[in-house]
Length: 223
Image 1: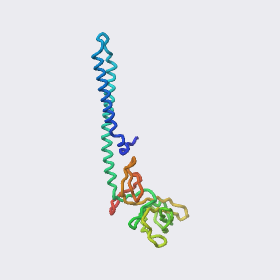
Image 2: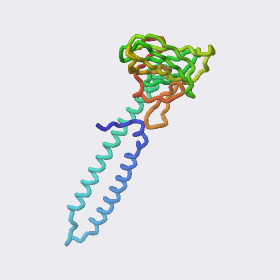
Image 3: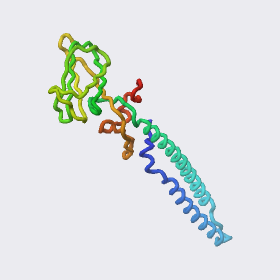
Image 4: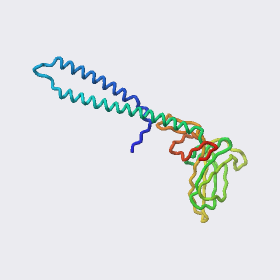
């Protein structure tokens, strides 16, 4: 199945109108030439009209095709307008994004995770943008989904500055075997970028595609 991106398709809108105008000019020239030839034909050797008839049919078919393209362009414009409206609706929303990076802002950074096994020991490590660990905590954690909220307190007792931080979660079971953990981050959408072929949401200073979002909610409400 071919997917039409309304944002990239907008760049070609207007071409059908130009094509149709060109066809109209060519048809006018053709009809003018035909009229002149009919006026000046030799009555004893009349022109063969089959060729002219075929060309008229071809002009009609092409014009109908261009008209269909114009209707398609209108549909694309409506689709793009709806898409723009829908994406703008994300502004101010809290989204859950696949990945380990989250923005620490206003004294909080939040991740969601899913421990996919019976873990007996789990270690949470928060690192700054340079990859340096700034906070680590370990302990027993129930398997399944959970939320890790960090208040910015570092291992040295200082408060971390605002910025992008990464959460690494390592989990092992009773035999010491590693347990798989899926990690997601939570952030607020504070911008939308339409400069590319698809709209990108700005969350915590990074751009996110719509297909990277796993959940959306308004702050203060449930998912």
